[in-house]
Length: 110
Length: 113
Image 1 (cartoon, chains in turn green, cyan):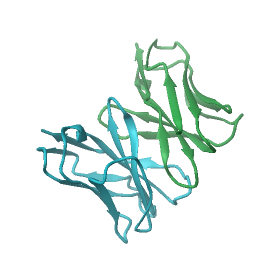
Image 2 (cartoon, chains in turn purple, yellow):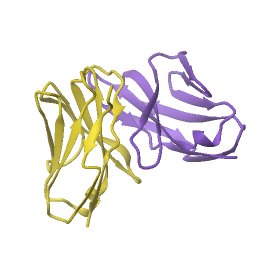
Image 3 (cartoon, helix red, strand yellow):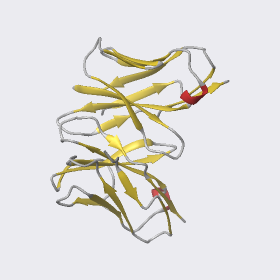
């Protein structure tokens, strides 16, 4: 059974304190690894898709990387508005089913 | 382009009732997937529709069903509601059924009393 695990469950940072969020996966036939951001009471907002080991993508203060076993979301000099839950999801098989991790709740203090 | 829309946004039902939720995908998107999100289980895949056909189904009981119309709009139905069905129901659309990025709607918050 496909599994996606995110750690830590929650992370509290001071504004400007860089850190990384981890997403490890055990799946058969990874076709893509997705990162989403979710604010309270809202649907997940798409951030990145990574397709192969070694791939990296950046957007503002966020950078996502992928290895054969895990993905990292690096947050550089975070701001309070980066506070949210970050979800990763693995796409496997010949369909559109995403297997999600349980998310990492990030809180950035001013 | 308008995003994915879901109606209603909030719903309160009692045990034993049934409920229908609606999802309108992004214009031009033909695939609609449904997910259930709860604090304990996170986001779990319910089913996916593409061109009016159910292509994939998650591990949920038969009380959960769905359909898709010719304009790609989708509905999901839950019959004989149980307290454990209280959750945020999210739909996501993508342009195809081959793994393209899925874009989520705001969700429908269902509370079963």
